[in-house]
Amino acid sequence: MKIKFVWLFGAFAILLILILPLVYFWPKDVSDLDDPWAHVPQALVHTDHTKIISAPFETGSDVTRACLECHQAAAFEVMQTSHWTWESAPVDVPWRDEPATIGKRNQINNFCIGTQGNEKKCMTCHIGYGWEDENFDFQDPNNIDCLACHADTNLYTKGDYGYVMEGVDLLAAAQSVRSPQRDNCGVCHFDGGGGNAVKHGDLDEHLINPNEKVDIHMGGLGFQCISCHRTTEHQILGRMLADNYTIPEEEQVTCTDCHLETPHNDDRINVHTNSVACQTCHIPAIALNDPTKIYWDWSTAGKDKAEDHFTYLKIKGDFIYDRNFTPTYVWFNGSNEYRYLLGDKIDPTQPTMINVPSGSISDANSKIFPFKVHVALQPYDAENNILIQPLTARDDGFWTTFDWLSALEIGAKETGLAFSGQYGFTETHMYWPITHMVVPVEDSLQCDQCHGPDGRMDWQSLGYKGDPIEWGGRHQLTR
Image 1 (tube, rainbow, N blue to C red):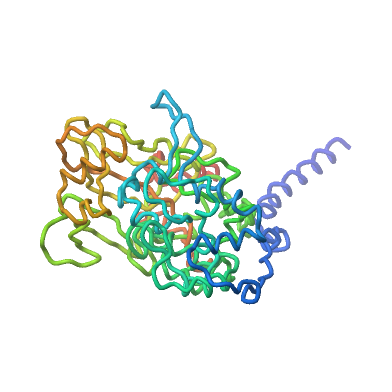
Image 2 (cartoon, one colour; image 1 turned 180 degrees about the horizontal axis):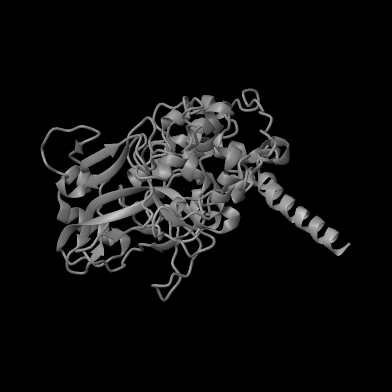
């Protein structure tokens, strides 16, 4: 009896050894997966405003007053958003004794550098009217530009200081209002930094009417931006890492808002999701169609030589663009480890990081994530060793005078920084996360594009000893 029991127990153990791997790795049926569509917000029913709005308008603020007659809470809601303030709430940063606010309003980048004093052109992308200087009234609801996000962009354009462009038919624009469409968002987010595709590398005018090869969500499934960037009381989820130090998790947009953490039928792929962001495999290249700027040399601006949008402009200097290229991969947990703040000391002999994505191989909340890295040579105070923002856009700015010393002196006053009068140009790097232009599944990365002798991953820089697939052992594919 005892021998029979041992035999049965042994046979059962052998069956478990044979069957469990089959069960574990057997492709899942799609019925085992959640339905992503269940999490996509329903589009609002459009209300035709052609018969609701009939009076002529003299100014953009006249339109706003008409909007607020029905949408009485909208102004208060808008004024709580970062689209309005262009500045974060005060945050503690390890290298400062006092909390700092961070945003387009008061910090710099390595593209057009900064907004202070340059409101004439920068505020064409602000959702307000008449932000000319530091005296702009953020508490006046009449300064809100409702049309920037809601009007048909074929009928409405903003001009200097965010005022309505001359010649716009405000009545026609007001009658065209609707929920924000891709072209509304794209006016600023596709064309930021001085033109189409310049800044982001994953946002350009191809997304206004894309096909599924450009973006499966927008082109294949008809998503609008607000399908993922969900909006409640004008608070739009998903903030730009470049203009913040940390972003609260509740303000993020993630793939798992709709998809499972392990959505694949093959567990050999699912095991990667512990360490690899969805974007890494499903956005295999940057700037699929339109080239994006990857290098900007401000030091050559002002010279009289042949001009071309993609190589040189007298007002901006030399450029390098690229398209359909491989991202830079780093560990990322959703926040910055560092974000350069006005007045931070630099070492001009080393590249200055405008921002540094936070994360590491030992951080359980980090995943390998794709980034565009933009490199620039931009001005700095050669005595005080701080980055300096030049005045560019006004009549007394560099784009008119081509006088660096004057532009930097005025820019320093606008930002409240001391300027020694000695300047040079130093290299800076800025990381831009790649999250748009998700390709169809058949165009996503395949195993050999990351693993093997010609793989795109720099395993050593990511903290691995080498290609983890060579180690054997399923657990080594993650950390």
